[in-house]
Image (cartoon, rainbow, N blue to C red; front, side, top):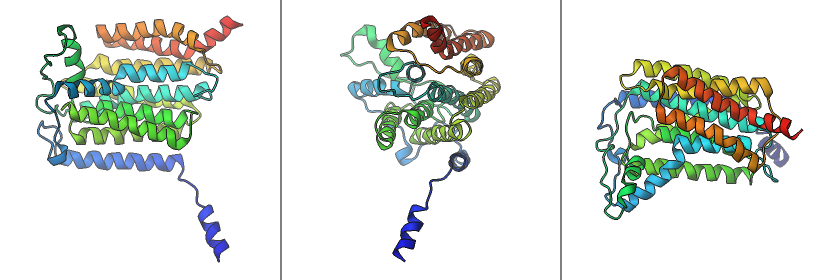
Length: 335
């Protein structure tokens, strides 16, 4: 009898990736339906612990503003790009396709943000765009302080929560550093820091960041189910979300069409480049820095100039395509 019980325990196997993805999507849909019933498209949508918290201490706001950068697009795109390009003696990414998976999830996450935010059109908490500059801060840094501690645009769900959750979870899923438990613990800690910073800054309600985390996990679950070893499928998923994001931005009163277009262009450019070359090598650190300069310049120019949709898509497609091509180009130069 003891042998039978032992056999029953060892026969258990974890659910398939498809099952996890279905459960995650179902949970997200139910959650979105639930919060919609309480009308999230109003400023005062928080009750009790769902109220935003905005401490008056300038130091606390400064710390939260710095922490929240871990969920900003510039940091997450940089992190995903670095994970794809660079190799080390103890490889953190086994194969380029693992890094491409992380990059594809990153682009798809920002498209998902635009889809959901424009669909719900929920305003920020009162005072989210206002902050008092601390007297101890040098005047030259006042603009930067205001930028990292305030929020504008739609609030539900939290874009920082979706982005940080999706990218950190994708890295925990694909990295080959430490144990699996350690990777997921680190990812969880990073996600908690980001979502806590958003609530402390008073730019989100707890419901905003909670649904954001669920949406980010759902995206990674779907990406793993359809493209665990085939990043081209994940780029296609990102492109699909990108099209939906552009449409949602067009239909939304305050939608930023160019912003949605940059992630659509990135998914398309990276997907086409991956289909064309499918690189099998990484870059060393110096090569990564050299390749990263022109790529970063393109991203910065697009972000700071906010060009029309077509130009935005072309620019980000080139930047993402160069990212995918870089290892192959370096390999040819070495040869």
